[in-house]
Length: 255
Image (cartoon, rainbow, N blue to C red):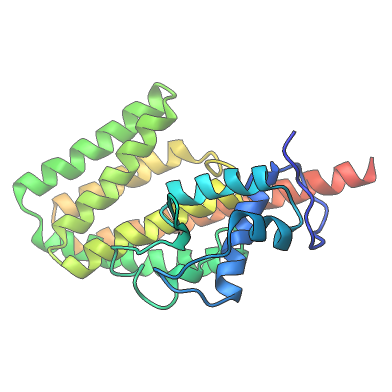
């Protein structure tokens, strides 16, 4: 069984595999050491000593972070903070985003709310017929994923939907920032929450439809309001999931 404990004490909570905890701590260490993209990281052995865990657990944590694009492992050369090709990733704050830090997650939701409102507003004014078809198609994929209980298809459609709206905004900066913000949010789900968060898929499908219809008829403000409602509902779902986990952890401690 993978280790879950480490050198720093943490509040009691539901079980999390040791490699997930270690992945979170590696990101914290990168932030604490102020390492920048391209900087060399401590070795696996050094990381294991710093985190108070085994090298095996660290290796699994590195695999997760590599898959997320936060760490690069170069054979024979060691570990490096990933060179992020995204516009936001090369900025000062993105390399230090901690997926399990609730303050970071909530700030990211605030940022996404502003993004999605503006991309939807601009898409309502600028979308071409072909771009409208792409938005509608993505919403359909998401709905089909929900109806067939295929999480992978739902996620694929959800990502394509928001990407298509950003494309229809005809603003390259918004297109890149939407992609990067969604990437960071996916990290918070994978590391911080151990998988997809919440269960408001049915509402999300309807919220997508409201956004699409507003964009289709060219109502910029209605599109922005629908996008804001969608992000607000997603955030509320996230908060509910966190509260349930805290309650569950408290119950385990009391029993």
